[in-house]
Length: 329
Image (tube, rainbow, N blue to C red; front, side, top):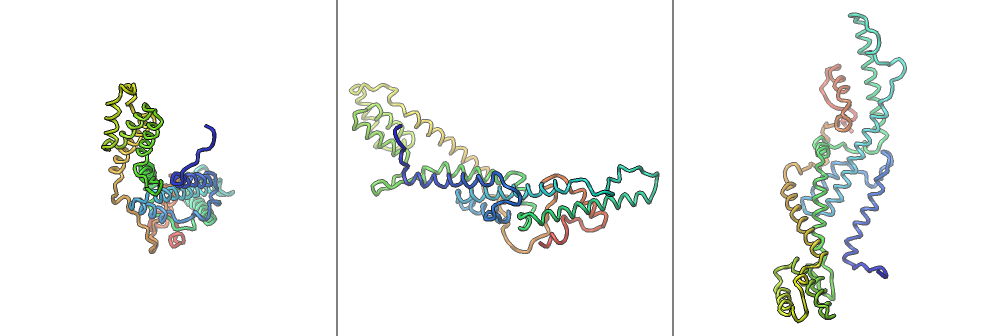
């Protein structure tokens, strides 16, 4: 292992996006809800719809990048919601204590009225705190995703599409790797490399390694008539070159790679059938008038619906989530 091995141009072109993706992903590992990269900030709905459109068009690399961006945006939204809930979950100001803990006068209407007012006041304070907190965070200045999109993320549906897209780009790597050698595009790259190895070993009078290279080639292209004839030739002269039966076995790394790719293709076909395009993959990416489909706290924290429901029942208003200003923003 004397020096660095030069990486061929086509291979380098395939590796660069992978390395770049790893470097870019690092900036999202540690971030604050106020410090998310501005260039990557966009409505979750639009990013997710674009990624699914690319997925449907078999643009695997672009779809994988878009799905990863969507997952980061959803994480930002979830973390921002949690941040505001933690911020507004503190003790109420003096005089706004929990009325349930105070002594209760038997059948005292005045006490019941005061208890309701204190409870209602605490809910108002918390609602105001949440609203003020969300005004400070960048993600809440964007259009809020509809409930169906949030349900997709709760069911981890984007991860399934992402796994398929990445698995598809990996399985198709050899197909897309067609380097230009001497003015000719090399197809069936892996098999062709074993053909070159066989020829080189034969010229070096290393017949054993030449035979193993032929057997390795046959793993990837068993119907090649030329290599079939070469194999027959080596078998016919096996005594001349003192070849043993084990010399006709493929090289170990060829067997491993063949078995891996065969298993990946089977898994890919299974995933394709499981994730075939259906109505669930369709996401409305339109930018028309925004529907009053605002979030419930249960989308993220599992708390808060009681308070919002209390407002609705107390005022006998329609049970909408959020306030009117938020619905129109």
